[in-house]
Image 1: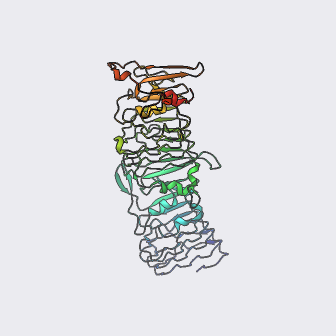
Image 2: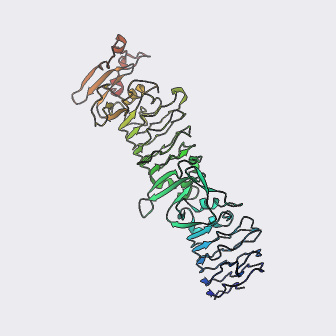
Length: 521
């Protein structure tokens, strides 16, 4: 009717058009590039105005209407059956508000490019029989996930354009809003509003979300929040580290460089990864991780994963890993490389962890390369065997020639723990926590707290009761025995050491421990 009339700017007095016998509205306003308004196209059953029940094609009806801003009056049109909707709103670049919430597009013969090119769209009304998949909606260039996201008008949901598209698949929307474990239909009319620069999305499990908040206007530094909407609903996410949803959104094509923007990660509200290994490995600028922030009683739930392998591997700027001490880890089979190469990490608190049997759990290089580690909080069900804490090549600042670990009283800076005084090298500490069933150095609920000091001292390899101390300024070497613990009586074996000078060359006998620390002492 008005196909290609580029000079048309307004259409008026069409309120009462009776269209009950019209079978085609194809190309009706196509190419009306300067059309800014149409008076109304609201259906009126009493008068028969804008009755489209017999229309079989709406193909390209508003295609290339570049200035037509509001397309909401036809929300209740009786669109149904095998209608052709191809290109209907294609490149309607000026449309900001579109409402098709009353339409049934599930049986359409074509929906190809129906919503392609709606580059100014800020508000969309859809219904439970609206289809977005296969319409070109998720290809709108200005509404891509890296540019913003969509908010449901009642604030019960947010997600990027890909997430929104899959909510309305071919066949209609059968998804319900899950609140406190109760499924409620979304309703016939649901409205979504565009939130530019709000980078957020969902996992395959639509109950799980992720959100990016920028730390600067240049968008070179970001915080990442990962959580669950309904804590009583499905909390599991099965994406592995290669498919974390924020990575694709933030990264350039074919890379994972978007992860380098993230400096802070928070996991909240009981999100439950089942393939958690390596999730945050190689995040070059990550400095802080919080496994449960503030008043959140849930945090991240690791009960669904069997591996924490490489979780933070290679995060060279990571300093703080908070709120992980409560993690239930008795079922975890691998902690290998978990903190490997975290050379800025200064505290690890795992004092509530109950690791599985030593021979059934891989801890290889768990702490290897943690060159700045200053505090370890442990318990008797933690094993440091094979952890790499004593790997002098990788952790070259925590060797016996650099200092020693001292057990201290909780809430003090360096007051020795009097009930069970202990200090020793990294190798001594690894041996002290070799098995995950030891009772020595358990702690008093708060964990056994060890801090790194620059004092040169350690233990004999074959007797943890026997110690040595070297005062390098005065060149004085002292050795002795710990006092027996309360209720403990030493036997001769508790006082014996078998170490011999290394220059004797006797195999099978440990060298004197200070010779290991200082070969030229």
